[in-house]
Image (cartoon, rainbow, N blue to C red; front, side, top):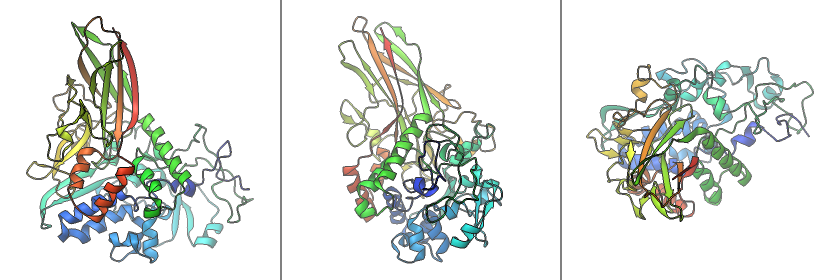
Length: 499
C-alpha cells in the first residue's frame, strides 16, 4: 500500500481521515449549534432569513456558498448544496479562500472570499497539479496565507448586531467571538505561533516533525513522481469540545455523521490532550493564620487566546477540595452534580439559573458557594443578562483568562478587554491568582489540597437560558444530554500537603 500521508510509525495522517471526526467536519450537524440557532430565530422571527444565512456561512460553509438563499433548510436538503452543507467546513472552503483582505474587519464574520478560479491553496511550492486537475478540475497552488492565522480569523471573529424582538437594530454591536483578535493581542504572533501551529500541528502524535508525500493515487498506491514534503499539517482541528463528538457518535442513527466511531474517539482523545496543554496550575506556599490556612492558587493560561475562547456557552472553573488527615472533606468549592451544574453542599448554586445572580469574579474564596468561574456573560441593552446572541449589546462579565502578552493598549485591546475583574490586581495577562481561606484546625492535619481547572463546553447557566426556549432542536438536544450529560473535562490539576 501507499506510504504517502503516514507518520514515522506508519500511522495514517491523511487530511480527510483526521478531519472526518472533527467539529469542522460536523459543524452543520452539531446539535448544540442547531439548538442555539433555533433559539435565536424563535426570539427574533422577523430576522430568520438573516440569522440563518449568517450562521450557515461558517457552519455549513460550502452549502451556504453554493446556495442562492442559504438557510437552515440546507442541512436537510437533498440537492448538491444540501450535501455540501452537511459536510460543514470542507477542504475546498478553507483551501479555496483568497488571501486578499484577510485579517481586516471586512473579512470577519464569515466574509471570506472564494474566487472564480477552481484553486486549492496549500503551503508547498510547485505541487504536481495534473492528478488533482484530472480528477477534480481543481488546480493546486502555493498560497502562504493557508498557514496564516488571519485565514482562521474570517470565521473565528464574529460580530453580532443586537436586535429587538421585532428585528429592529438597537445600534449595539458585540464581538461575540474574538478568538483571532485575542491571539493577535498576545505574545504568540511575535513567536510565530499561529492558530494552525496548535490546531493543525506539523508534528506527529509522538512529537516528530512530519515529512511525507502529500498525495497518493486513487488506486491506493504511491505516485512515483511525488516526493516527501515538509511541513505537513495534521488536520486534527480540535479545541476542547468532547461533548458534541460523543453526542454525534452516540446518536449517529439520528444525526447521521459520516465519521466512524473510531474517528470520533480519536477526536475526543485529541481534544483532551489539547486541553491538557492549555493551562497549568501552580499551588503556592500555604500560609496559616491560626485555624485558617490561606492557599494561593495561580492559573497559567498556555493557550494562544482567552481561556475559554469563542461562543459564550463555554466556561472553565476552579474546583478546590481540602481533606483532613482522616480523609474527611473540610472544604469543596467548585463541585458539580451529575448534570454538570455547580453545587455547594449538594444544592445547585443560584448562579446556575438563567435568572440567578452572576457569580462574581473572586480574588479570595472562603465558602463553598463561592466559585471562581472563567466565563463571559452577555447583557442586553438594559444590562440584563441574556443567552440570546442577538439581544446582547455588551458583556456583563468577562473574566476569561487572558493570553500571555495581552495588552490593554494594543489595537485590539478594547475589543478583547476583560469585564468585572478590574479590582483584582493579579488578574493579568496570562494568569490569575485566587486565594482560598479554609478553616483547618491545627492538629487535624496534614491536609491534602487538590485543585483542578475544569472546562465545560455547555455551561449550566447558558443551558438553563437555552432550555427556557421551546423548539424541536432544543427538545432534541435536551434528550441527547440525558444520555451524554454536559460534564466538565479536567484541564489541569495539582496537589499540595499542608500541616
